[in-house]
Image (tube, rainbow, N blue to C red; front, side, top):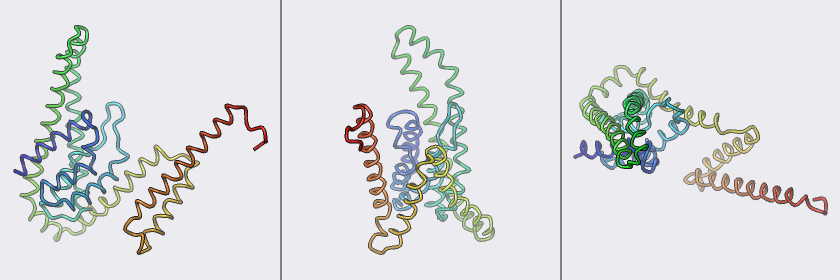
Length: 261
């Protein structure tokens, strides 16, 4: 039953990357769902939140695809739940398997590029069913590839559980390195996002957020709600900045205030 459900949800997540909601496939949502299937929702929440930070800055640019968030999340959950690996080590191994998801997407795009002529012809003939048929073919190819990879990962992860446990003891230096890499990747993903989004005039707010998180996190009364409190502060700054800029534009549109303020 777990294999069947895992194949079904992975099929849906694979399609959701480019169709449907484009939200379900994100690790922060997908991993808890996979955790419920595997019988460990708590691990799904931990891996989902951590893996989301790793993938938050990865996005496709044109035809170039980043390491895939769907397959990486599936494999990380399997290693963490079925093979009983620590979260950081499971994430370190999952990054390797996320490359297979990247290849699956690229392969699907390559195959579908040859079928686009059919979609063009259907559009010329005003044939919506023909265009729908091409889209459904693309979804089925991508979903099936991901479902097969997820099932292979499930069977392999369950079979390799004891081997991985003994290997983590005999080669602790290697597994320790994977754990360090997995722990570091969440910061790398966030750094990629900041490189794209962060403007020079936002450094003060960025550093203030770190300071607020450190303060709230070390107080017993607020440590459990640190992220929410910092988010409220960020929302307050954003609302204030938005309203201020609106008023400035209104004044500029009216020629400025007559009292010199």
